[in-house]
Amino acid sequence: NPRNAVTLVEVGPRDGLQNEKSGVIPTQVKAELITRLANAGVQIIEAGSFVSPKWVPQMAGTDNVLTSLPTLPPHTRLPVLVPNQKGLDSVLSLLETHPHLASSLEVSVFTAATDAFTKANLNCTIAESLRKIEPVVRSATDNGLRTRGYVSVVVACPYTGNVEFKAVREVSQKLVDMGCYEVSLGDTVGMGTPYQVGEMLEEVKKSVPVEKLAGHFHDTYGTAIANVLTALDHGIRTIDASVAGLGGCPYSPGATGNVSTEDVLYALQNSPYYVMGTKDGGIDLSLLVDVGSWISNLLGRQVASRAGKALQAR
Ligand code: HMG
Ligand code: MG
Image (cartoon, rainbow, N blue to C red):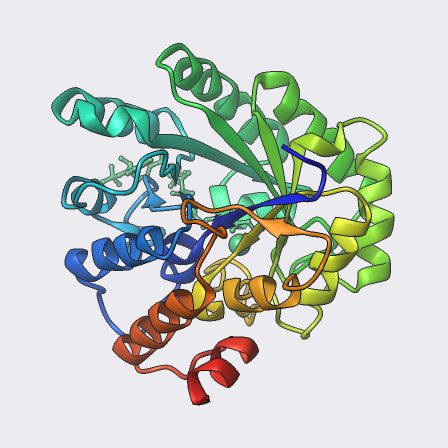
């Protein structure tokens, strides 16, 4: 990829919906959201989670979502969150009954930079989570599934406050050493400022090549788009975003959704950067705005994307 090509990872169907409180979102709605995003040109769409339904009820039935998808544009990639061996076993048995999914499914494992957050999110310490993740990454890789890693609370933690950037660097390096092709750095709480994000990235880059890093910014304090641009300035070329700015983590109280996909696409128009997608010209912003309005309407929410709202009104 040329150095100005930006990869967008759409996390709306997972991060965006996992904490939705408006009621159980039907499988068909989840599948339609993924389909509409893919048809707007989004190539990488995080499709759901194989986590405990007791912990995150809204992600129950991700297997049904995946099996009810129509044929998506070629090269569409569908990562799913997997916390442990049980989650991976479910993914592997799904592939046995639905081998056509093998070309698109990927696995995302996740841990964090503080023990307190890892306890709340995964019921174990960072060290224990890494011990659980390692065989999962190995077995996923042996089964031909690419594996991405997430590190949460890279700037601030809802339980400890400040975070040691050295801890972010060490955990990121361990995920890469295990075989994750990329590590997504999550400002889970959405409190990070551009200056802090820059400082954090410089620390992580001491151990992990920037080509293997992605930025995952929640927008609680309104700094997410500024943090995206800061990440690009620091060499990051993969950005996680959520259509209509949906989302929040159930174990980060008060955190709002991710930076919106519409805002990222809008901010990078007429810039040296090019956001890749499966359509001519990458991702179709106006189709994406329609997807954002559609899903927000269905959930009974306002579109949280500023560019989405403005473009919708025109
Ligand atoms: P635990 O309670 O210690 O697990 O939770 P356990 O092994 O004792 O099992 C408890 C029950 O869960 C058992 O069922 C298991 O079978 C079941 P029971 O016997 O009671 O009926 N179970 C599972 N069911 C389905 N799939 C599985 C699975 N594993 C166990 N994979 C556990 C440990 C990891 C399971 C739990 O803590 C969990 O599922 N956590 C997931 C939390 C989560 O999904 N959080 C949101 C995603 S992370 C995020 O949003 C941050 C991110 O966006 C980046 C950022 O913003 O920073 C990625
Ligand atoms: Mg998140």
